[in-house]
Length: 456
Image (tube, rainbow, N blue to C red):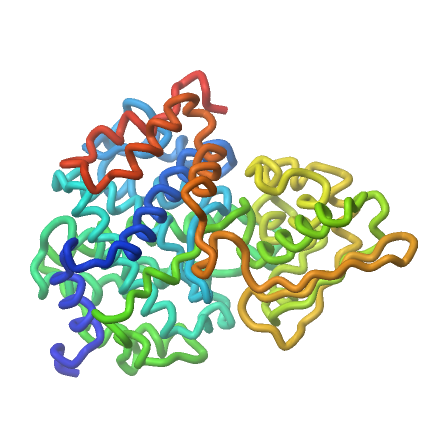
């Protein structure tokens, strides 16, 4: 295939040419929300096991110019910083995605390499936001083209799609030319990976966090290799042995470039509300609403029945999770925790999710069935010990594209995620709100660092 006809060439041309002034204000607001949310999630990531593992990993990493959110003073090379940042953003299941789902996590795979590349190149707030939009537009289109079918073959999709978006973000911030940017996509196709076995094996759940870190890191690596003269196939996406054919059971090549330059995929960005897997969000939101509306006493619940898409029962009906990652992946555990505790507090889905006896007992009374629903849509029915039933049908939640978080809701989530920053949390949020006015982002190194005595 001649490069001029390839999807990678078209996507690279678009990303290279995108300018801040071209992007509509509502699109920039979504990109900025993605950035703010990811930084908050990275700071909170230090409170869970993956964050602890990352800090030990970084203790062996070489010094460099790049900071990692939540870590004071120390600086690392771009690869290590991007990897650590990707793991931290995804560490507590707080990071953003697309709705409808497409196996993409923009906050975890795009923001960390963007911050690393901006630190190297001296990028401004304008530069970072523009690069994020370019990366999201490419990442989301590639994800949509997979028809979310890679996971049916046992792949963890964000580890596959992420390197492409990360490569675009890094390449744009480092100012590579169109041909080099195209080559980074060809290289990125060989840098992805991630298996879903963690969801079935009963152990090894932390590997899920690595998939996002590796995808973020791959963006740095792809650009470094392309600038050094390495190449990759221009037909990396749609070729006979390219990405879509190799990884996907179903795909739609036309979605790789559909609406490029006229329709912004960034407007499908979804911010999570809870620190658990996205599959649990609609039933968790439903039981929150039902409990509040009917003053439900969780001790009186005889059963909870949830109906949803096929993947809900296939991947998320986990009654006895072996570790915290699987507990956050378990819809029964997440729904039980939401009925017993404050679902808006990320700590509810921390170690207590696995260790709390009441949560474990209530989770055993949750059943999941497959309906004709698609995406996140679920029907949740709570039955009490006297036979009283309460039911809620839920297709979305605050944070979905149709009902994006308000300024106050975004700030409230950010505050919860960055509580260890103390009073500095509010100052950081306010400055990030106006990041387009920042000439460079060096101030962020210290602003997002958790004081030594405040970290677990």
